[in-house]
Image (cartoon, rainbow, N blue to C red):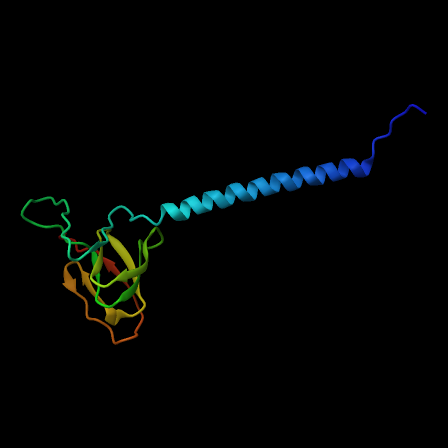
Length: 149
């Protein structure tokens, strides 16, 4: 009568509880890493220069007398201008609304641009103005850096 039997259901309950705790910790770790990744991508990417147009930005150049021309410069001319710019197949450089007179400049060799309303922004491709679209027209296009820049 002094024999002690282990309860198979008790062991199963312990195993399931342990597995649930491990899975919960894994979900917390994955969620925290994803959140940190998203928060880290909110800062301007290398080569990006979102600045209000009232402030002048000084960009380094190969020659002191020749200013560096961005591959794409987007200047908001409305109260808000939804803008999306990314490196093709790579990093998203901006995916947000610009405020009136705010601008964003990018110097990467090739860029994909999406404008929700092309009439609300001025776009300069390699220093040359792009024709604005009709009001409300969504535009998506790619820009490559000019070989001489």
